[in-house]
Image (cartoon, rainbow, N blue to C red; front, side, top):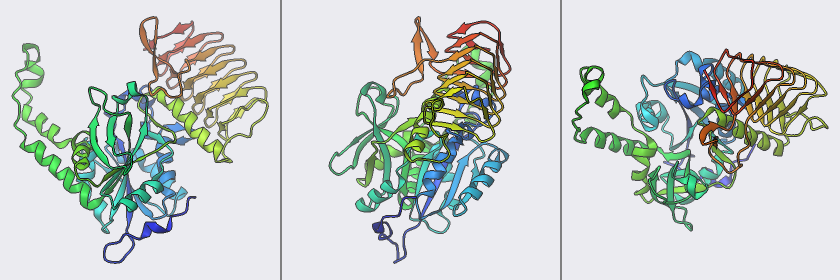
Length: 444
């Protein structure tokens, strides 16, 4: 566990050490459609990557900041969806008080914070972290806290460099290289501005962020409404259903990235910590595979005892759940996660893949660059494979024969692949039986 630097407790209001909380944003069921078919069974934040739910990696980082005692999970999933996880995480990290705050509807990343501001501000915290749950990162939160203190900042965001051609897919930051101050921020610009991008991890002073969100809400409500004239086909569906309701709903959605951050950038006290460590968004189902590789490598470098010990047939890093059965002649790795109660037969080869619980891979099958869904069965001598993409690439789609396809092959829940069948670059929805070779298809 990283120790708190002594200078962190210096800043205070009225003499006492400053207090810090954390908020993890998880979204809701109408989001995450790009994570299908995996999100049909499980909310994306609870999907296991490197042996642990995506959101647990956020909690592990938060637990390494000694002064954080309280964490809020904000989203609009049903409470029952997150209850088992919150019970588990409260046991795993007893020093953290964890609460799930459910939005009554999708309010946006800033709208959710503002809606629960009274709960977050209870006990008068001086600042709080905001983490997007669908981010894979080493989360250098203590370094962000240090920069926040050193600069007497109102806000600090985590940033990273990406290739110029990928930068416009993210929020772009123009910063002063010497002082690290954010000079300008634009969400998904049309042209190139900077290759320093927003990582979706923030540290805000409470006295700064809530007034900034309030101003954004005020601007939104005062903005003149544009009258739209629907086409004749859409008259039935949209016009008569009361457009005012829709407009009010739009007004309620306030997003940090689009509506708030560019204003804070004008405040002169907004800074960016540029991380040289790994970072990746987990948006599509296929992006879980590179995220799995990054987290496994981090665990391997930290010499985690959770990982399987290297051997002739285990090429590290590999995570094997204790309840899984792996034949000693099967060869696994690198970057493989094997879930609970998985059965892997003799002579099997698994590489750069996630195999989910209760699956079976029969003898001499080969699985590469793939996700094998819950309770799926892969026959003997079958091949299930995707296509490797460059480590620096932030996309999981590739072009084959002029058609855009997923680079990672994904089998949904309870899929079956017959003996000697080859599946390449396919996404297979749950409960499908594949009895012939398929390539570059979505199997409905």
